[in-house]
Image (tube, rainbow, N blue to C red; front, side):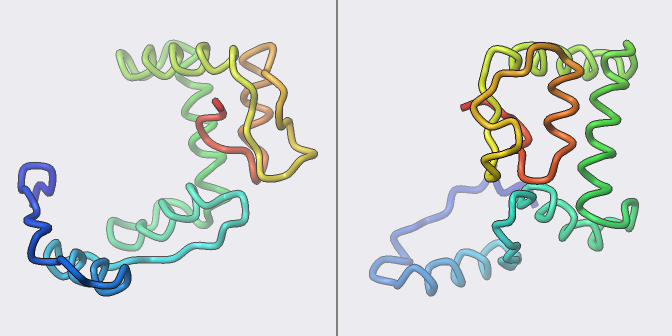
Amino acid sequence: MNIFSEALDVSVFGGLSEDAYLDAVCRVYGVRVCSVPSNGACFFDSIYALLPTVGKAVKSSKALRLSCVDFFKQCFQDKHGYLGERVQDEITASLRHKIVSSCLTRHTNKAPKTVDNYFDAVTKHSVWVEGAT
């Protein structure tokens, strides 16, 4: 099902509590809510939580983060064609922005000076994937 091509008639959910609304939307789309801890790796924890539905390519959310950074590095080795070029552009643009981290000692409020500095920052637990504020 392509959920973006189907409009959801929210009028049928009027007057529901937030929890009841969320349950109703999940029933309509046949999905469920999966909570992950807010520990600085929520993006990777969320993706990792979905992996059992498509396969077990990675052993942990930490390994997933490192695999993503490895992919980013490969993009800077001119691999992955057009997608690699887009990743290069996005990371290069990120160099102008401060890193966002839930841990005050991890690169937070500092803009990476080089691509290698960016890679070093995003390999750390608690640093946001995008990094831009």
